[in-house]
Image 1 (cartoon, protein in one colour):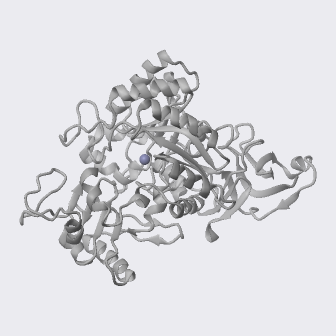
Image 2 (cartoon, rainbow, N blue to C red):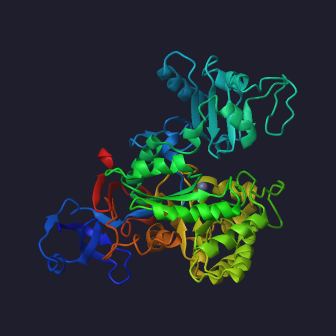
Length: 546
Ligand SMILES: [Zn+2]
């Protein structure tokens, strides 16, 4: 048995018995021990590896809510507002106007050469461009002969050019659908809202299965993004996981050089509660070192910035109608009861506080029928939860994964438009969650916002909006709490804290290798700490060569 001892400038362990140390010994992909070289030498012969001597090691970072679809998107052209790094490490500058979007798509169009292959852009966020409506005329400037589409950052709106509308059979007078706005000429403007009108056009502009689910290339690209972000374990929060997809996940993650443990949740769509729970329970035995299975994701409502989240009285600040239920209450109740009885963990997307309340009350009732002292059912996003709701969650044994990145990306809109000043201050209330005793992590929901737990930690610590305001200063958490949230905190929510989340004896040898010490840099600089790469299961992955 070969033992390697790594020295580091500093090792932040997240083990409360020994928070900092200088050396870590690894054997068979697991942590043999931490401490001084002298202490570790007691385990017998070893190789001393000092390649990290000037680096800072942390437990491998854990993303508790993301989608491997982020890896698929990079096959298409990025046209978002903010700068964003692709799997090759190239940073794509943000585009700031419709003309910029057209120019970038034109470049991509030229690279395609001739033919009528579709062209798809993604990440458009008109909320930053004074809510300008892009039209088919704009996209006709890119091409009149090939179908061109642009997917919005929210994932809920698609713009297409005239060719795209034509191929979808939508280029005609008399459209009478709220999701298909028409122009002065009586024809659709090219903006398509809601899944049922996006899909018919989507398939002609490249928005097909590989975009929506994942394919082998996408899953590998996603893993490369993880290495660049210091992530060694990531959820994939909501996959159909049918036989084909399961086999794809197994094939890709079993490769010796696959650098991440994926935790793939079965989404609640398309199955009865009974089949969903039985099927998900049956997946557990297929779990491997790099593919964790056997958990359910349920979607209860929509998004706050899309006004599709279910929120309580007094509703949306701008008077918008309340949002949508994505699941019927009796279905949610049946899923919870069956899952508790089968020992299957459920993570539930609730954005609005009305949806959060439904999940809490439904679980309380279900627990009377099927008690479980350690279910750790987790609310995902849970952005608007009140202190009373966090108290209740703590008493029921629930965990939470808060959407800290929202402060930066949509904080100004929440203050001015969606929920108004007072409730904007309590959004993603990390401090209240922790002080009420709810086990907590924070997330990016990539591709909704970019994958990067250090950025997410920065967002939770600083609560800065895109315009630079600090929103909800009383909900800021310390750097230490934020680092806890993106390591052991996330492991707790996925019931993996006995395997990952800290650097201590017996756990998987998963490290994030950083160039700077997050405990030493200014809290405002957390997001800028360069990531050298990762160690996952004892295997070393350098971002520069991944
Ligand atoms: Zn999500």
